[in-house]
Length: 410
Image (cartoon, rainbow, N blue to C red; front, side, top):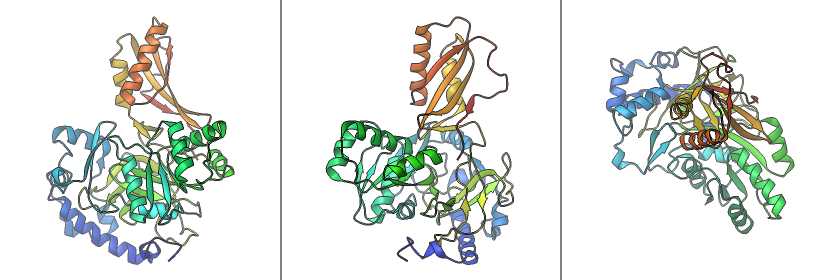
């Protein structure tokens, strides 16, 4: 058991499936006491959901639909089974999409991902995920606390101040985006700050190319990934085996054909759809927009749950840049605020092991002041800095694409 967080991780597959189906019946029954779910699942008999195949016949809930429902029925579109006033925290992600947090010790299901990454009770962990309004910092912090770790609530930015804290408090682990970990290590090397205590990392919110993982490893930090969203918490995580991501024990994950709710054969790339067992804020077949595929077999680490290959792109045009979702409607909003612009296209790339984005915008009369103004609007709307390039009218492809994610996968 020392190698695993609990006995759930090593259950026989048939036992897990039987117990999960029973939990689905319970959670759908509870979900339908909430107005939003009662409307979305109208006509569904929870008792009829007696198998994974029956679950697959329920309608999907897309994140874009969740956004619209929240606008119609604040604060959570009626999808919360626990009243907002009885939540622990009420938060907001870009979109905006609003999320609650309940009072359970490991409400986001993060502790087992922390354990798999090598964190242990009594460790000090440096958490560089954002705490301001967004859930990221709280998701990871709750897992570390549930495991018995102390947390430095660093958030992003203020690099030199963070290095002071690391040098003084000597954390054993890091949580945050892999990009920011590299920034911390690079800055420490330039300034002579001691960050050698950090030997392990649990990262999310940005791509972890093999080249970046290898560089971090060569600098003494063994980094593992987890896959998380604000609505689901931790959906899957890596173990020391580093062979795919293991699905969390508090949910059911499906891979479906994009644009449908139909499961695809194992190994085929499709959209990630998740059903959680969260009694406060249940999600029934939430379509994440992320692409992945089932990895056959079980992990060499001994955990027996389904594995996925990890993040393999987006089923829609939404991109996650430096841990923040950038949606097509946000890019369109930038264009709307500047009538001088024609077609716009946000190009997302990698530069020096960092996410980078460039807004390409058609404009008949380009000048430096307009470029600066558009860049300021881009940062205001997306909360991220990006380069702006004004190009001649008619030079961008007429293919309906608003976001072009050109980052390498894997």
